[in-house]
Length: 317
Image (tube, rainbow, N blue to C red; front, side, top):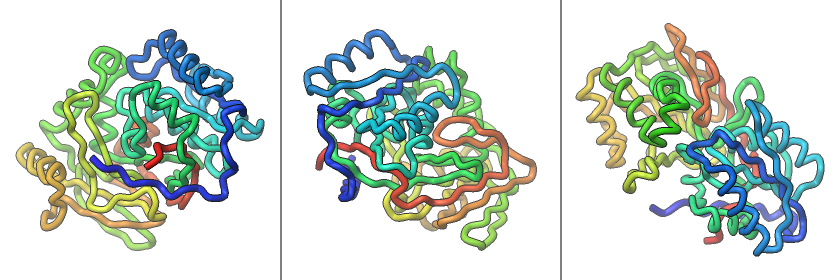
């Protein structure tokens, strides 16, 4: 499918292959063969004359701290090697700086890379990280200061993420999410959500509330199965998209998924969409929440839009 071409970050300094890049790699990402990946990365950077330093993460928060230090140390870019969780941490470390983010997608889902059109192949992804186009994209920001590129969610999506254990993801890859989704979808949860969007409140029983900055989701590496969660979700409009999914029965689940897959969003009270710069999501009872595929706790969830919050290296048109 065609991906939006990000607007160039015109005030960003020229990127020269002679300056150093920090590579932040998460050895626990997806089904990553770390040693083989490092050999491929070293070769791909070397043939492009691009020097780099390497940082291995060992736990939560390491990638964010490494990215923040790299920005302060004057690196020309920080490249995240891993999944959406690793990318999200690096984003939080770079947000508000002029140091661009590069992505080598090696996680289970890699949804941020999907939205930006960054290839999964290491050689092709390194070409983007070294010689790609610096482009400004929006971010979301949580109440605790954490930033996200993809989405924050409450309810069904977070329950699926909770159900896809590390062992399942190591064994089945993206299939772990499909399995967890089938288990949750058999009896779709219904929670009373109170959503405040730019000061306007909506109370609705639903299975899931997604606060999206990016809209494309793909079930790689399976045959092409890419859907947009909303009618006009954009990471360059300065707004967040609130996507409310309210199936009540198993047939409802199938009907909602079919409508989303066919991009038929209007005329169904099981699908509700709105846009806002500031969004709060509360629920009775509290439900599990996630951001960019990582569990973060339970409702309430508060997010605000950060227009042009980070520069990312993307493929040239």
